[in-house]
Image (cartoon, rainbow, N blue to C red; front, side, top):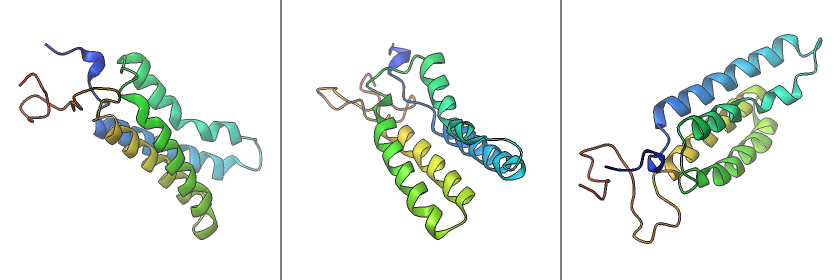
Length: 128
């Protein structure tokens, strides 16, 4: 039996929830931007990733992907807002962050054998 903390973050739910929350916050910012200062609220999608790490006790060897995900997401946002509408760049940056975070978590950082976790029967679990 494998340690549940060693499982990677679920790809579909994390990417979907992060992207949908980014869309909701971008719409909220667009609709009420004149009346309220919601700039700090734009960091909201990271709360979903933190929740995933805390609730499911994702091991540190699995959440290292947040660093490259954040760097790429920020680059997409800052470069993209000059080329496209800013809310589109915001959503794209968060979506890319979530994708990189989940994909990077498939490889355990610091595992001497380079083991990768995956669903049962996938051939990625070293116990199989």
